[in-house]
Amino acid sequence: MPPLLPARTIKEVHEGLRKKEFSCREITDLYLKRIEKFDGAIHSFLTVTDDEARAQADAVDADIASGRTIGLLSGVPMALKDNLLVAGGRTTAASKILDSYIGSFDASVVASLRASQAVFLGKTNLDEFAMGSSTENSAYGPTKNPHDLRRVPGGSSGGSAAAVAADECVYALGSDTGGSIRQPASLCGIVGLKPTYGAVSRNGLIALASSLDQIGPLTKTVEDAAIVFDAIKGPDPMDSSSTAAISEPIAGQIFQSIAGLKIGVPEDYFIDGMDPAVTAALRAAIAQIESLGATIVPIELPLSKYALAVYYILQPAEASANLARFDGIRYGLSADQAKNLDEVYRLSRGQGFGQETRRRIMLGTYVLAAGYYDSYYKKAQAVRLQVRRDFDNAFRQVDCIATPASPVTAFKIGERTDDPLTMYLADIFTVSANIAGIPGLVVPCGYAEKADKHLPIGLQLLGRHFDEKTILRVGHQYEQSTEWHTITPAIA
Image (cartoon, rainbow, N blue to C red; front, top):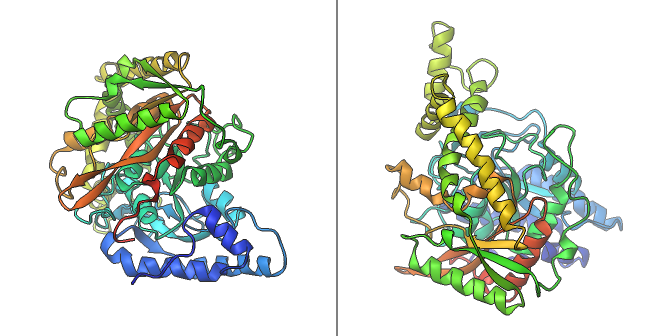
Protein backbone atom coordinates (compact mmCIF):
# COMPACT_ATOMS: atom_id res chain seq x y z
CA MET A 1 0.00 0.00 0.00
CA PRO A 2 1.25 3.51 -0.76
CA PRO A 3 1.93 5.82 2.19
CA LEU A 4 -1.31 7.57 3.11
CA LEU A 5 -1.33 11.34 2.74
CA PRO A 6 -3.14 13.30 5.44
CA ALA A 7 -3.29 16.35 3.15
CA ARG A 8 -3.28 16.91 -0.63
CA THR A 9 -3.96 20.62 -1.12
CA ILE A 10 -2.17 23.73 0.10
CA LYS A 11 -5.00 24.61 2.47
CA GLU A 12 -5.11 21.06 3.88
CA VAL A 13 -1.36 21.03 4.53
CA HIS A 14 -1.50 24.49 6.09
CA GLU A 15 -4.36 23.57 8.41
CA GLY A 16 -2.68 20.30 9.41
CA LEU A 17 0.55 22.10 10.28
CA ARG A 18 -1.22 24.90 12.09
CA LYS A 19 -3.26 22.47 14.20
CA LYS A 20 -0.17 20.29 14.73
CA GLU A 21 -1.91 17.22 13.30
CA PHE A 22 1.44 16.38 11.69
CA SER A 23 4.83 18.03 11.46
CA CYS A 24 6.33 19.53 8.34
CA ARG A 25 9.09 16.91 8.48
CA GLU A 26 6.46 14.14 8.54
CA ILE A 27 4.49 15.42 5.55
CA THR A 28 7.72 16.06 3.64
CA ASP A 29 8.94 12.54 4.32
CA LEU A 30 5.60 11.13 3.11
CA TYR A 31 5.94 12.93 -0.21
CA LEU A 32 9.57 11.84 -0.55
CA LYS A 33 8.48 8.24 0.09
CA ARG A 34 5.85 8.53 -2.63
CA ILE A 35 8.47 9.79 -5.06
CA GLU A 36 10.70 6.88 -4.13
CA LYS A 37 7.85 4.39 -4.52
CA PHE A 38 6.18 5.63 -7.70
CA ASP A 39 8.55 7.80 -9.68
CA GLY A 40 10.54 4.93 -11.09
CA ALA A 41 7.44 4.17 -13.18
CA ILE A 42 6.35 7.77 -13.88
CA HIS A 43 9.72 9.57 -14.19
CA SER A 44 8.40 12.97 -13.11
CA PHE A 45 11.62 14.03 -11.40
CA LEU A 46 15.08 14.58 -12.81
CA THR A 47 16.54 15.56 -9.45
CA VAL A 48 15.19 14.90 -5.95
CA THR A 49 16.58 17.31 -3.34
CA ASP A 50 15.66 15.31 -0.26
CA ASP A 51 18.31 16.78 2.06
CA GLU A 52 17.35 20.35 1.18
CA ALA A 53 13.64 19.51 1.55
CA ARG A 54 14.13 18.05 5.02
CA ALA A 55 16.22 21.04 6.12
CA GLN A 56 13.51 23.41 4.91
CA ALA A 57 10.85 21.32 6.69
CA ASP A 58 12.82 21.37 9.94
CA ALA A 59 13.07 25.17 9.76
CA VAL A 60 9.27 25.44 9.45
CA ASP A 61 8.78 23.04 12.36
CA ALA A 62 11.11 25.21 14.44
CA ASP A 63 9.01 28.27 13.64
CA ILE A 64 5.80 26.46 14.58
CA ALA A 65 7.35 25.24 17.83
CA SER A 66 8.39 28.78 18.72
CA GLY A 67 4.84 30.04 18.22
CA ARG A 68 5.46 32.01 15.03
CA THR A 69 2.57 32.37 12.58
CA ILE A 70 3.24 30.55 9.31
CA GLY A 71 2.01 31.57 5.87
CA LEU A 72 -0.17 29.51 3.54
CA LEU A 73 2.82 28.14 1.60
CA SER A 74 5.08 27.58 4.61
CA GLY A 75 6.13 23.95 4.77
CA VAL A 76 4.13 22.88 1.70
CA PRO A 77 6.12 20.33 -0.39
CA MET A 78 6.35 21.39 -4.05
CA ALA A 79 8.38 20.81 -7.22
CA LEU A 80 10.06 23.02 -9.82
CA LYS A 81 10.28 22.49 -13.56
CA ASP A 82 13.92 21.93 -14.42
CA ASN A 83 14.25 25.07 -16.51
CA LEU A 84 14.02 27.27 -13.39
CA LEU A 85 17.33 28.17 -11.79
CA VAL A 86 18.00 27.30 -8.16
CA ALA A 87 21.16 28.68 -6.56
CA GLY A 88 23.65 25.83 -6.12
CA GLY A 89 21.26 23.31 -7.68
CA ARG A 90 21.49 21.30 -10.88
CA THR A 91 19.42 22.76 -13.72
CA THR A 92 19.42 20.88 -17.03
CA ALA A 93 16.38 22.04 -19.02
CA ALA A 94 16.28 18.29 -19.85
CA SER A 95 19.22 18.76 -22.23
CA LYS A 96 22.58 17.00 -22.32
CA ILE A 97 24.20 20.34 -23.12
CA LEU A 98 23.39 21.44 -19.53
CA ASP A 99 23.83 18.05 -17.89
CA SER A 100 26.28 19.32 -15.26
CA TYR A 101 25.14 22.93 -15.03
CA ILE A 102 24.72 24.34 -11.50
CA GLY A 103 22.57 27.43 -11.09
CA SER A 104 24.32 30.53 -9.79
CA PHE A 105 21.19 32.25 -8.46
CA ASP A 106 17.54 31.64 -7.66
CA ALA A 107 14.96 32.45 -10.31
CA SER A 108 12.78 35.26 -9.00
CA VAL A 109 9.79 32.93 -8.56
CA VAL A 110 12.03 30.49 -6.66
CA ALA A 111 13.24 33.33 -4.43
CA SER A 112 9.61 34.31 -3.76
CA LEU A 113 8.69 30.74 -2.80
CA ARG A 114 11.82 30.41 -0.69
CA ALA A 115 10.77 33.58 1.18
CA SER A 116 7.36 31.92 1.66
CA GLN A 117 9.14 28.91 3.24
CA ALA A 118 8.12 26.45 0.53
CA VAL A 119 9.70 23.00 0.70
CA PHE A 120 11.50 22.14 -2.56
CA LEU A 121 11.28 18.40 -3.28
CA GLY A 122 13.20 18.57 -6.56
CA LYS A 123 13.26 19.41 -10.25
CA THR A 124 10.84 17.90 -12.76
CA ASN A 125 11.23 16.53 -16.27
CA LEU A 126 10.29 18.44 -19.43
CA ASP A 127 10.71 18.43 -23.17
CA GLU A 128 14.25 19.66 -23.88
CA PHE A 129 14.34 23.45 -23.44
CA ALA A 130 10.53 23.24 -23.18
CA MET A 131 10.22 22.33 -26.88
CA GLY A 132 7.43 19.79 -27.10
CA SER A 133 3.91 18.72 -26.23
CA SER A 134 4.50 15.29 -24.71
CA THR A 135 7.66 15.32 -22.52
CA GLU A 136 9.09 12.70 -24.86
CA ASN A 137 11.84 15.06 -26.05
CA SER A 138 13.70 15.00 -22.73
CA ALA A 139 17.31 13.88 -23.00
CA TYR A 140 16.66 11.80 -19.87
CA GLY A 141 13.67 9.82 -21.13
CA PRO A 142 9.92 10.43 -21.24
CA THR A 143 7.57 11.07 -18.36
CA LYS A 144 4.47 8.87 -18.24
CA ASN A 145 0.90 9.82 -17.49
CA PRO A 146 -0.17 8.57 -14.02
CA HIS A 147 -3.64 7.78 -15.39
CA ASP A 148 -2.15 5.38 -17.95
CA LEU A 149 1.58 4.66 -17.97
CA ARG A 150 1.40 3.84 -21.69
CA ARG A 151 0.50 7.44 -22.48
CA VAL A 152 2.11 10.88 -22.40
CA PRO A 153 1.40 13.46 -19.69
CA GLY A 154 1.51 16.31 -22.21
CA GLY A 155 4.28 18.86 -22.42
CA SER A 156 6.44 20.60 -22.01
CA SER A 157 5.67 20.76 -18.26
CA GLY A 158 4.75 17.07 -18.24
CA GLY A 159 6.98 16.21 -15.30
CA SER A 160 5.37 18.89 -13.13
CA ALA A 161 1.84 17.88 -14.16
CA ALA A 162 2.44 14.17 -13.60
CA ALA A 163 4.04 14.81 -10.20
CA VAL A 164 1.00 16.79 -9.04
CA ALA A 165 -1.48 14.26 -10.46
CA ALA A 166 0.33 11.33 -8.80
CA ASP A 167 0.53 13.09 -5.41
CA GLU A 168 4.31 13.28 -5.54
CA CYS A 169 4.03 16.94 -4.52
CA VAL A 170 1.27 19.31 -3.48
CA TYR A 171 1.87 21.71 -6.36
CA ALA A 172 4.52 22.51 -8.94
CA LEU A 173 5.70 25.34 -11.14
CA GLY A 174 5.85 25.03 -14.91
CA SER A 175 6.43 27.34 -17.85
CA ASP A 176 4.03 27.99 -20.70
CA THR A 177 5.24 29.19 -24.12
CA GLY A 178 2.42 27.79 -26.27
CA GLY A 179 0.37 25.71 -23.84
CA SER A 180 3.05 23.94 -21.81
CA ILE A 181 1.19 24.36 -18.52
CA ARG A 182 -2.38 24.09 -19.75
CA GLN A 183 -2.10 21.13 -22.14
CA PRO A 184 -0.42 18.78 -19.59
CA ALA A 185 -2.88 19.97 -16.93
CA SER A 186 -5.68 18.86 -19.24
CA LEU A 187 -4.09 15.50 -20.03
CA CYS A 188 -3.28 14.78 -16.36
CA GLY A 189 -6.59 15.94 -14.87
CA ILE A 190 -5.30 18.84 -12.76
CA VAL A 191 -5.44 22.66 -12.74
CA GLY A 192 -2.95 24.75 -14.70
CA LEU A 193 -2.67 28.55 -14.88
CA LYS A 194 -0.77 30.53 -17.50
CA PRO A 195 -0.71 34.11 -16.22
CA THR A 196 -0.82 37.20 -18.39
CA TYR A 197 2.52 37.94 -20.03
CA GLY A 198 4.32 40.23 -17.58
CA ALA A 199 2.31 39.26 -14.50
CA VAL A 200 5.11 36.96 -13.27
CA SER A 201 8.84 37.60 -13.59
CA ARG A 202 10.74 35.42 -16.06
CA ASN A 203 14.10 36.16 -14.42
CA GLY A 204 15.92 32.85 -13.92
CA LEU A 205 13.76 30.92 -16.39
CA ILE A 206 15.94 29.39 -19.12
CA ALA A 207 14.51 31.29 -22.07
CA LEU A 208 12.81 29.53 -24.97
CA ALA A 209 10.86 32.37 -26.64
CA SER A 210 11.14 35.53 -24.58
CA SER A 211 7.98 37.22 -25.88
CA LEU A 212 5.86 34.13 -25.22
CA ASP A 213 7.28 32.44 -22.08
CA GLN A 214 5.40 32.70 -18.80
CA ILE A 215 5.77 30.87 -15.47
CA GLY A 216 2.71 29.53 -13.65
CA PRO A 217 1.39 26.92 -11.19
CA LEU A 218 0.08 23.38 -11.64
CA THR A 219 -2.18 22.43 -8.75
CA LYS A 220 -5.00 20.17 -7.63
CA THR A 221 -7.55 22.95 -7.18
CA VAL A 222 -8.24 26.42 -8.58
CA GLU A 223 -7.89 27.90 -5.09
CA ASP A 224 -4.38 26.46 -4.85
CA ALA A 225 -3.52 27.99 -8.23
CA ALA A 226 -4.69 31.39 -6.98
CA ILE A 227 -2.64 31.04 -3.78
CA VAL A 228 0.55 30.23 -5.69
CA PHE A 229 -0.12 32.97 -8.24
CA ASP A 230 -0.41 35.51 -5.43
CA ALA A 231 2.98 34.41 -4.12
CA ILE A 232 4.88 34.70 -7.42
CA LYS A 233 3.17 37.60 -9.26
CA GLY A 234 4.35 41.18 -9.33
CA PRO A 235 7.07 43.45 -10.69
CA ASP A 236 10.73 42.51 -10.65
CA PRO A 237 13.62 44.86 -11.41
CA MET A 238 15.42 41.91 -13.03
CA ASP A 239 12.68 41.52 -15.67
CA SER A 240 11.72 44.68 -17.53
CA SER A 241 8.62 42.98 -18.98
CA SER A 242 7.14 42.34 -15.52
CA THR A 243 4.53 44.78 -14.20
CA ALA A 244 2.60 45.72 -11.08
CA ALA A 245 -0.71 45.54 -12.95
CA ILE A 246 -2.17 43.11 -10.38
CA SER A 247 -1.41 44.55 -6.99
CA GLU A 248 -4.16 43.07 -4.83
CA PRO A 249 -4.33 39.41 -3.67
CA ILE A 250 -6.49 37.24 -5.93
CA ALA A 251 -7.13 34.09 -3.86
CA GLY A 252 -9.75 35.68 -1.63
CA GLN A 253 -11.80 36.93 -4.57
CA ILE A 254 -12.57 33.67 -6.35
CA PHE A 255 -15.50 32.68 -4.13
CA GLN A 256 -17.93 35.21 -5.60
CA SER A 257 -20.87 33.97 -7.62
CA ILE A 258 -20.51 34.05 -11.39
CA ALA A 259 -24.18 34.92 -11.90
CA GLY A 260 -24.44 37.65 -14.50
CA LEU A 261 -21.03 37.06 -16.07
CA LYS A 262 -20.93 36.65 -19.85
CA ILE A 263 -18.97 33.61 -21.04
CA GLY A 264 -17.98 33.60 -24.69
CA VAL A 265 -17.92 30.33 -26.61
CA PRO A 266 -16.15 30.41 -30.00
CA GLU A 267 -17.45 27.75 -32.34
CA ASP A 268 -14.16 28.18 -34.25
CA TYR A 269 -12.56 26.03 -31.52
CA PHE A 270 -14.87 23.03 -32.00
CA ILE A 271 -13.02 21.71 -35.01
CA ASP A 272 -13.39 18.64 -37.20
CA GLY A 273 -11.31 15.72 -35.95
CA MET A 274 -11.68 16.58 -32.29
CA ASP A 275 -12.25 13.56 -30.03
CA PRO A 276 -16.06 13.24 -29.62
CA ALA A 277 -15.57 12.60 -25.88
CA VAL A 278 -13.75 15.93 -25.59
CA THR A 279 -16.53 17.73 -27.44
CA ALA A 280 -19.20 16.16 -25.23
CA ALA A 281 -17.33 17.00 -22.02
CA LEU A 282 -16.82 20.61 -23.12
CA ARG A 283 -20.47 21.06 -24.06
CA ALA A 284 -21.50 19.66 -20.67
CA ALA A 285 -19.06 21.94 -18.85
CA ILE A 286 -20.39 25.01 -20.66
CA ALA A 287 -23.95 23.99 -19.77
CA GLN A 288 -22.90 23.60 -16.13
CA ILE A 289 -21.39 27.09 -16.10
CA GLU A 290 -24.66 28.41 -17.52
CA SER A 291 -26.57 26.65 -14.74
CA LEU A 292 -24.49 28.63 -12.22
CA GLY A 293 -26.02 31.85 -13.52
CA ALA A 294 -23.59 32.90 -16.24
CA THR A 295 -24.82 33.86 -19.70
CA ILE A 296 -23.35 31.93 -22.62
CA VAL A 297 -22.60 34.18 -25.60
CA PRO A 298 -21.57 32.76 -29.01
CA ILE A 299 -18.55 34.68 -30.29
CA GLU A 300 -16.19 34.55 -33.22
CA LEU A 301 -12.40 34.45 -33.12
CA PRO A 302 -11.76 34.11 -36.85
CA LEU A 303 -8.02 34.74 -36.70
CA SER A 304 -7.28 32.10 -34.07
CA LYS A 305 -6.88 29.56 -36.86
CA TYR A 306 -3.69 31.37 -37.85
CA ALA A 307 -2.22 31.38 -34.34
CA LEU A 308 -0.52 27.99 -34.66
CA ALA A 309 1.26 28.98 -37.87
CA VAL A 310 2.32 32.29 -36.31
CA TYR A 311 3.57 30.48 -33.22
CA TYR A 312 5.75 28.06 -35.19
CA ILE A 313 7.46 30.99 -36.87
CA LEU A 314 7.94 33.24 -33.85
CA GLN A 315 8.84 30.58 -31.30
CA PRO A 316 11.64 28.91 -33.33
CA ALA A 317 12.96 32.35 -34.33
CA GLU A 318 13.25 33.46 -30.72
CA ALA A 319 14.55 30.04 -29.68
CA SER A 320 17.34 30.16 -32.26
CA ALA A 321 18.47 33.49 -30.83
CA ASN A 322 18.16 32.43 -27.18
CA LEU A 323 19.90 29.09 -27.61
CA ALA A 324 22.86 30.67 -29.41
CA ARG A 325 24.33 31.23 -25.93
CA PHE A 326 24.99 27.48 -25.65
CA ASP A 327 28.19 27.57 -27.63
CA GLY A 328 30.50 25.24 -25.69
CA ILE A 329 32.47 28.21 -24.38
CA ARG A 330 30.67 29.95 -21.54
CA TYR A 331 28.90 27.07 -19.81
CA GLY A 332 27.47 23.64 -20.43
CA LEU A 333 28.86 20.86 -22.58
CA SER A 334 32.08 21.60 -24.48
CA ALA A 335 33.33 19.06 -27.02
CA ASP A 336 36.85 18.16 -25.91
CA GLN A 337 37.79 16.67 -29.30
CA ALA A 338 37.35 19.99 -31.15
CA LYS A 339 40.41 21.22 -33.04
CA ASN A 340 39.29 24.83 -33.59
CA LEU A 341 36.58 27.30 -32.58
CA ASP A 342 34.23 26.31 -35.38
CA GLU A 343 34.40 22.69 -34.25
CA VAL A 344 33.76 23.71 -30.63
CA TYR A 345 30.46 25.26 -31.72
CA ARG A 346 29.47 22.51 -34.14
CA LEU A 347 30.42 19.49 -32.03
CA SER A 348 29.21 20.88 -28.71
CA ARG A 349 25.80 21.72 -30.13
CA GLY A 350 25.60 18.55 -32.19
CA GLN A 351 26.31 16.38 -29.15
CA GLY A 352 24.34 18.47 -26.65
CA PHE A 353 21.10 19.34 -28.45
CA GLY A 354 18.42 16.75 -29.19
CA GLN A 355 16.64 16.28 -32.52
CA GLU A 356 13.62 18.50 -31.83
CA THR A 357 15.79 21.30 -30.48
CA ARG A 358 18.02 21.18 -33.54
CA ARG A 359 14.95 21.15 -35.80
CA ARG A 360 13.52 24.31 -34.23
CA ILE A 361 16.87 26.13 -34.17
CA MET A 362 17.26 25.46 -37.89
CA LEU A 363 13.68 26.55 -38.60
CA GLY A 364 14.14 29.73 -36.57
CA THR A 365 17.43 30.56 -38.21
CA TYR A 366 15.79 30.10 -41.61
CA VAL A 367 12.87 32.47 -40.96
CA LEU A 368 15.25 35.11 -39.61
CA ALA A 369 17.59 34.90 -42.61
CA ALA A 370 17.92 38.04 -44.68
CA GLY A 371 16.10 36.63 -47.68
CA TYR A 372 13.13 35.30 -45.71
CA TYR A 373 12.70 37.71 -42.78
CA ASP A 374 10.01 39.84 -44.45
CA SER A 375 8.14 36.85 -45.88
CA TYR A 376 7.94 34.92 -42.61
CA TYR A 377 8.98 36.62 -39.37
CA LYS A 378 7.75 40.13 -40.17
CA LYS A 379 4.47 38.83 -41.56
CA ALA A 380 3.97 36.59 -38.50
CA GLN A 381 4.42 39.60 -36.21
CA ALA A 382 1.77 41.48 -38.17
CA VAL A 383 -0.70 38.58 -37.88
CA ARG A 384 0.14 38.30 -34.16
CA LEU A 385 -1.13 41.86 -33.68
CA GLN A 386 -4.35 40.98 -35.47
CA VAL A 387 -4.88 37.88 -33.27
CA ARG A 388 -4.51 40.09 -30.21
CA ARG A 389 -7.05 42.55 -31.62
CA ASP A 390 -9.38 39.60 -32.28
CA PHE A 391 -9.38 38.83 -28.55
CA ASP A 392 -9.72 42.52 -27.62
CA ASN A 393 -12.87 42.69 -29.74
CA ALA A 394 -14.26 39.54 -28.16
CA PHE A 395 -13.64 40.82 -24.63
CA ARG A 396 -15.76 43.87 -25.37
CA GLN A 397 -18.69 41.45 -25.48
CA VAL A 398 -17.83 38.90 -22.78
CA ASP A 399 -16.03 38.56 -19.44
CA CYS A 400 -14.15 35.40 -20.29
CA ILE A 401 -13.96 32.77 -23.02
CA ALA A 402 -14.48 29.00 -22.65
CA THR A 403 -12.73 26.61 -25.07
CA PRO A 404 -11.28 23.11 -25.19
CA ALA A 405 -7.72 22.80 -23.87
CA SER A 406 -6.70 19.90 -26.12
CA PRO A 407 -8.44 18.33 -29.11
CA VAL A 408 -7.67 14.85 -27.76
CA THR A 409 -6.99 13.03 -24.53
CA ALA A 410 -3.51 11.72 -23.69
CA PHE A 411 -2.04 9.88 -26.67
CA LYS A 412 0.26 6.87 -26.48
CA ILE A 413 3.99 7.26 -26.00
CA GLY A 414 5.69 7.09 -29.39
CA GLU A 415 2.46 7.62 -31.31
CA ARG A 416 3.42 11.03 -32.70
CA THR A 417 7.20 11.20 -32.41
CA ASP A 418 7.74 10.50 -36.12
CA ASP A 419 5.22 13.14 -37.21
CA PRO A 420 6.22 16.60 -35.92
CA LEU A 421 3.26 18.35 -37.58
CA THR A 422 0.73 16.11 -35.79
CA MET A 423 2.60 16.72 -32.53
CA TYR A 424 2.49 20.49 -33.08
CA LEU A 425 -1.29 20.32 -33.57
CA ALA A 426 -1.61 19.24 -29.92
CA ASP A 427 -1.22 22.96 -29.05
CA ILE A 428 -3.88 24.21 -31.45
CA PHE A 429 -6.19 25.55 -28.70
CA THR A 430 -3.53 26.95 -26.39
CA VAL A 431 -1.02 28.88 -28.52
CA SER A 432 -3.35 31.82 -29.20
CA ALA A 433 -3.26 32.87 -25.53
CA ASN A 434 0.53 33.18 -25.72
CA ILE A 435 0.37 35.00 -29.06
CA ALA A 436 -2.06 37.51 -27.51
CA GLY A 437 -0.39 37.55 -24.07
CA ILE A 438 -3.65 36.86 -22.22
CA PRO A 439 -4.14 34.57 -19.18
CA GLY A 440 -5.45 31.02 -19.51
CA LEU A 441 -6.71 28.52 -16.93
CA VAL A 442 -7.42 24.81 -17.36
CA VAL A 443 -9.66 22.85 -15.00
CA PRO A 444 -10.72 19.19 -15.21
CA CYS A 445 -14.15 18.80 -16.85
CA GLY A 446 -14.54 15.10 -17.61
CA TYR A 447 -13.01 11.75 -18.45
CA ALA A 448 -13.00 9.65 -21.60
CA GLU A 449 -13.11 5.88 -21.64
CA LYS A 450 -10.10 4.56 -23.56
CA ALA A 451 -9.71 0.78 -23.41
CA ASP A 452 -9.43 0.02 -19.68
CA LYS A 453 -8.50 3.57 -18.61
CA HIS A 454 -10.24 6.83 -17.75
CA LEU A 455 -8.38 9.71 -19.39
CA PRO A 456 -8.86 13.32 -18.24
CA ILE A 457 -10.33 16.17 -20.28
CA GLY A 458 -9.75 19.86 -19.53
CA LEU A 459 -11.79 23.03 -19.93
CA GLN A 460 -9.82 26.16 -20.86
CA LEU A 461 -10.88 29.62 -19.67
CA LEU A 462 -9.27 32.67 -21.28
CA GLY A 463 -9.40 36.18 -19.83
CA ARG A 464 -8.56 39.81 -20.49
CA HIS A 465 -5.02 40.98 -19.88
CA PHE A 466 -4.29 40.94 -16.14
CA ASP A 467 -7.80 39.66 -15.34
CA GLU A 468 -6.72 36.39 -13.74
CA LYS A 469 -9.32 37.12 -11.07
CA THR A 470 -12.24 36.45 -13.40
CA ILE A 471 -11.01 33.21 -14.95
CA LEU A 472 -10.02 31.88 -11.51
CA ARG A 473 -13.45 32.85 -10.18
CA VAL A 474 -15.27 31.09 -13.02
CA GLY A 475 -12.93 28.11 -12.77
CA HIS A 476 -13.41 27.79 -9.02
CA GLN A 477 -17.19 28.00 -9.16
CA TYR A 478 -17.32 25.43 -11.95
CA GLU A 479 -14.84 23.14 -10.17
CA GLN A 480 -16.75 23.23 -6.89
CA SER A 481 -20.02 22.36 -8.65
CA THR A 482 -18.52 19.15 -10.07
CA GLU A 483 -16.40 16.28 -8.82
CA TRP A 484 -13.89 15.98 -11.67
CA HIS A 485 -11.07 17.51 -9.62
CA THR A 486 -11.49 14.88 -6.89
CA ILE A 487 -10.67 11.92 -9.17
CA THR A 488 -7.12 10.63 -8.77
CA PRO A 489 -5.12 8.22 -10.93
CA ALA A 490 -5.09 4.57 -9.91
CA ILE A 491 -1.38 4.87 -9.18
CA ALA A 492 -2.14 7.59 -6.60
